[in-house]
Image (cartoon, rainbow, N blue to C red; front, side, top):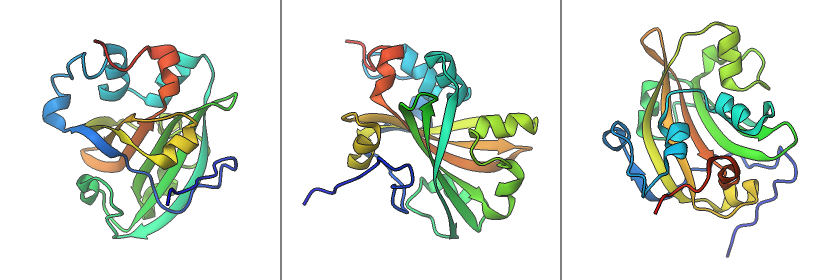
Length: 203
C-alpha cells in the first residue's frame, strides 16, 4: 500500500524525519575533489559541496528572502534517530529540528533536519523561525561547515512536500564551533531549483 502525505498544512509532517533512499551516495573522499560533471553539474556542486550558507545561496538565486517553516522540534534523548552515524559527535541528550526552507512567496526549496544538544539549542536558536545561518550570524558565531556525505535518492514524503518528483540531491554536514561539533544537519534540495541552477547533470 502506498503511503499518503498531506503537506497543505505546514504542521502536517509526522514526528519522524525524511532520509533519502539513495540510488548513489558519496563520502568525504568523493566530496573533496568534487564529483564528475556527468554526475552533478558545476552549479549544483557549488550549492551541495561548498561550505557556504545554503539559505543565503537560495536567497541570492531566487531574489527573495529565504523563510523557514518549523515543522518539528522533538527531544530524542540519546536515540540515534536513524541519522548519519556522525550524530554521535553531537553531545546528548539531543533535540531534532525539522524545517522547510522556502521563498517568501511560498515555493519550497529545501527540507532540513538538524540535531542539537538539547541543553544549548535555545542559546543558538533564539528566534526559531529564522534560518540557522541568520540566527548564528546575529550572534557573530564563527562556524566551520564540514560536509561529510552527499546523496542522490528517493523519498515519497518529500515528493509530496516539494510537489516535484524525485530523485533528489541531499547532503549532511557538521557545524563546528570553537573546535567542537555544534549541530548535525541533513538537507535535501527541491528539483525546482533547476529553474535557477540548470539541470543537475551534464551529459
